[in-house]
Structures are given as structure tokens and as C-alpha cells.
Image (tube, rainbow, N blue to C red; front, side, top):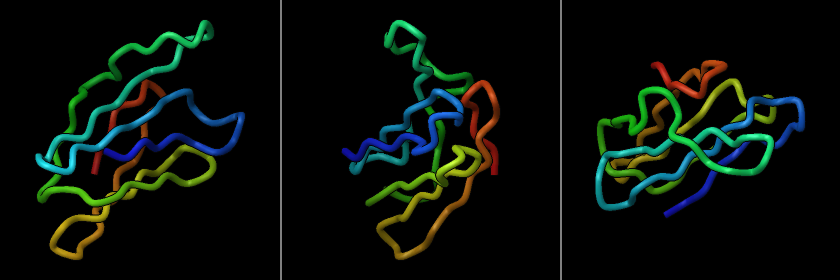
Length: 84
């Protein structure tokens, strides 16, 4: 399991966790209190099992490396939803 969140303080308040044994990517919203809630549309699906995830510093894009040496790219919406 790998945890990924945006580096910039001004970025959206979301965190993503991948499953290395499935194609599911889980998104969570971070409330002002620090409590986690499920992001819109979570869990998200990838084409292959994931081995790593990364996010741009502004939180606008999420990248997933897969076990077949490919990288999948997602746009991150303001509500934390992902789209290809």
C-alpha cells in the first residue's frame, strides 16, 4: 500500500491509497478537522495492479505506475474525483 497526497498547501485536500493486489485506487477527502471521508467516485479503477502512485505538487494530476511497466494519468477534480 502506498499513500499519496498533494505537496502544496493550497492544493485540494485529498489523499489517495493504492492496493497492490487489485486494480482499486481509493480516494479520501480530508476535512478541516482532519477526518477522512470517501472522495466522490471512490474507489477508482486502473487497468493493471499498481506498484506506485504520485501526484503533482498542485494536486491537479495523479500518476499510477503499474506492474506491467506502464503509467496511467488521472485529472483530479476539486471534489477529489479522478478522470482519465
